[in-house]
Image: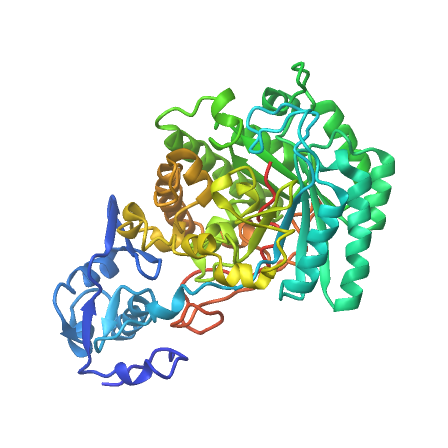
Length: 539
């Protein structure tokens, strides 16, 4: 008997597909039943499949090894051709092994995607003119500023010692526009140095929006700086958490400044942070109805000022998952009715992890981007494993004024960075046995440390991911168009999520046995490959 279905391109697998080859069900598959359907997840490849009817009954009969011939001879309503195609589908999803081999090479699938950081974040100041309740940096009006010579030293060493040719230099705070003059001097100096060494830096900043005056907008536009504005949605949402030290809401000023900046042609993106999960729908709809098709909505975290000002009750993750899924469903309905794409982070990131084996975004892979994708720099020139860790001394890995070790050597040899690179889902006790470990990737290292005092724990929002990812699997299965409507549209450019609408078009991709795209055996969805230069835009 010869298999007559579409060939798998990987030649290594073709000889296995003979009538006498043994078909063995992959052990320890996760199962979740809903009425007459069952979701199966293979944890080591992060592959999943939902079966019902004859397909489910057929697969459930593979309780012991059987030959390909025996698999085809199982009697049900499927034709022989359909059974052959079904066997290849099971094989390509990691649900069965054929001839003692899995379709996936697990040892090759989850390698670290890059060695040296491409997102470098300078905390220009610890000062801020607002007193936002969830501020990760816990900034105050009395905070210190980074001396100009320190900032100059940082960019000089990054441009001459960090191997990547193209990378992003991001200005953060505190409120970086309070150091506008020095920041612009640093950008101009960096451009001159870059010309001499053949590097191509991209410049970004994250602002609360209140100091975004016309003169500053003009200067930022002239220098080609991409600007992220922290805006939580409409005034009734935004002003609950983002106000002055005297408690005055900042929405009117921020939104007015942002509108003017966009009218002046400044490349502007928006980041919202939600503390009350009921605000997901309100915030998302506001951005959408303002005409934006690309924006980011994060949940608040118990890091920095958050634990002092806000409550983080038990069971919070479940509530966030429920309201977040309400937002996803509404967004899908809207894209269908209006024939438009919505690029909402982190809906798109989660769809990417469910529909491809690519993990381009540093906060959505294991190990995360600490050291290998990102470095943060404090006002004193301190070097930190991640920009979110710049207020946590535990993650200080050096100082820019210590020139005995180059940036490259620091990344290659620093013991703290080496230890953080061992924080993978295989080494986190709860994650190591989780059916979602290759999909969730273990969550944010800094937020885990802030919550538990150790990096060797699961994400504080573990319950959110357990619910959201499984709900998304069922939803994608029933609504395959959501991959195109809410996933990534083709390959992202090395810019962050701008406020303008992205171009239409979907880049369909698949995976081969090593998790690479493209290939001919469809697992799910689109290829979300992209640079990760925007994924650390935080509040």
